[in-house]
Length: 428
Image 1 (cartoon, one colour):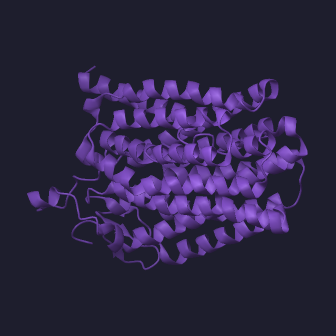
Image 2 (image 1 turned 60 degrees about the horizontal axis):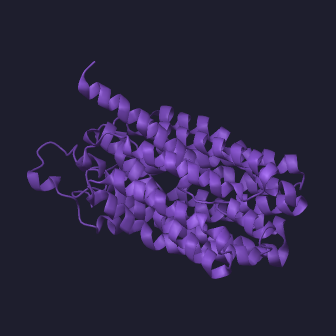
Image 3 (image 1 turned 120 degrees about the horizontal axis):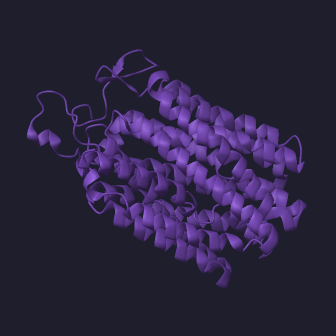
């Protein structure tokens, strides 16, 4: 077996492990924060929503610069390792300083560091396998990511039942150490840093100047990218608050089982996400990238309506399985669509950061919107409001977003039936 083949296999295994262990680290405390603050610190729902939104907006500021950093740096592994340490330290100090502003500041730092992971993992993947194999590699990334989330949530649920909600902090520390080792195990020589930012694969006859990255104006002049950003923002405005709301309902029914039931919800969804991510990786290039994104959007109004039908614990956990369908598809198709649109521009990762900025704005507003509606009108009204937002996102995607998958060196458009060029230097 050749040295290159051995290095490639090692890189794939290390990237699998990194996705598995970073699953728990990249989101910090995630929905566990709401349960912890509600049950242990006795915060009300509105305060929880506000502090989570403050932390979310702190992360928003870092999104696009983080993508630009990943585009520019050739030390992607070390950047990811540093971000993992920052997220972990910021979360571990939370039990020591549970006041409003210490929680908001520490979680803001965690969110700002955590935005490094999505563009970095996508960049390392693209730089390792190229555009042709990228969809399959992203599907594999997401499969391991969801498997890691399911494993961590199961362990957290069982341990929290016996030792209390604080156990999630220790689990986060362990996953961070394992993720550091996995990231640094990726062989540096297997990453093509130019390809990782979306360069190469230029049209025949392109000159050397064409190998330079496009101007940052491509982020504002690429109409399909702007439409996609709007759809992503609406997806997360609808989706981000749903799981925390379910966790709060479960915790109010049984404080002692709140964290364990939250873990059951996460585990149920993550188990479903694994085959969904594998399906995207295996079939998206054949069936169409837009179709998968539409399916992810459609699931949200259905899920929101079902949450209002019963407060039964088994029902709420069961409905959470639909989160696995929507989020599983979205997580896998998101970087693929951005890579489609940014092919040959050299702005793949900064474009990811820009779209994730829109995503984060939606997610941050989601928790505030849901918290205020719960206080004024109850949980059912909040779920229905979130579902209505998702329905708007579905309509925008259906009518305005073109198909992005490449067909014979061009990107086809489902909405017009005409070829749509990638948003590269020539296409603008």
